[in-house]
Length: 338
Ligand SMILES: Cc1cc2nc3c(=O)[nH]c(=O)nc-3n(C[C@H](O)[C@H](O)[C@H](O)COP(=O)(O)OP(=O)(O)OC[C@H]3O[C@@H](n4cnc5c(N)ncnc54)[C@H](O)[C@@H]3O)c2cc1C
Ligand code: SF4
Image 1: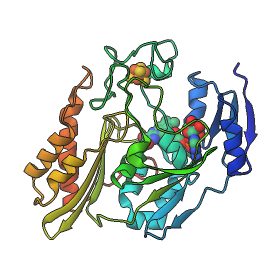
Image 2: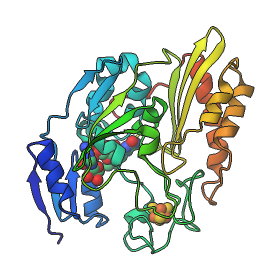
Image 3: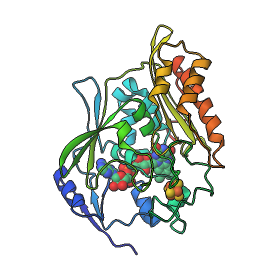
Image 4: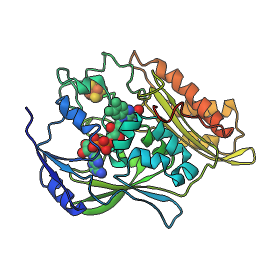
């Protein structure tokens, strides 16, 4: 039996005060990850602060021509918002590649950023895991590690971040708006999630009690030259082994700028600005895309079961960039069940 108290916050200030004042308190939004973690005994919050009634459900236009997405906007509403479908199809496509329709209806924008790794050992409390229980070791190193990281891992943790939406947000260079006991701040998306290093228990740079209030997208770019390519063991209801969010800006047949982010390969969405720089001024070609892929994957290292991911990622990057260049983005196979 796990005892915890439950309270529904009526304002942002009330929510922040309730969680920041109690080290064992957690926010709960859609509950699609946190409740599972509680059932597996991975998370044992003493207090749940329900934020679902807070006024954070709007998607509004920003002065800079972008969109501000409230932290409680459900993943489905976001993917099917006409402005997102028209101006940020890369984001819509990534969201629809994840989970199931029912889960996307419940899952929120803020919760998606904070979902935890799907490492099998993290969920199995009988096994060592530095992320769940710091200092106990890592069951995945030398264990079953087909889904684990090939980039940015540490000697303490080789987990990956499981989100699809976050890979698109990384390529789109979103900004996360946060409110906490010390006031409000913004965090560039690339600085939001972190690599495991010697503190694998920390997935991101939020402080305890800080609440995500919104995610902001800059003005749209890439036009039709984008794609979200997700490779996984099953065509629906499975997390990415490797995914690629790619966007290109073309001047005629020359690449003016590029953004490429990888999912399923590291503890955070993986971007390498030098790889994007290699594409600038190039004509779209398999050679140019291969060189960018090699730079993105520089230093990649398998752990045994996941060695295949290095070549899979290389091919996926080249294919995604070809799709983006040709303006033939990957279509999700079935939006209703995927
Ligand atoms: C079977 C299954 C398959 C899935 N497949 C995929 C997939 O293929 N791709 C994918 O991307 N995702 C997938 N998901 C994950 C799903 O997208 C996440 O569970 C969901 O986005 C989490 O959102 P939530 O609102 O339910 O978060 P919750 O479970 O409510 O919260 C998750 C965490 O975020 C914190 N939190 C929530 N909101 C805030 C906030 N505003 N500020 C601060 N902290 C907050 C909570 O305290 C908690 O720690 C899958 C989930 C399941 C169960
Ligand atoms: S990879 Fe990370 S999450 Fe998985 S067992 Fe090792 S420490 Fe835990």
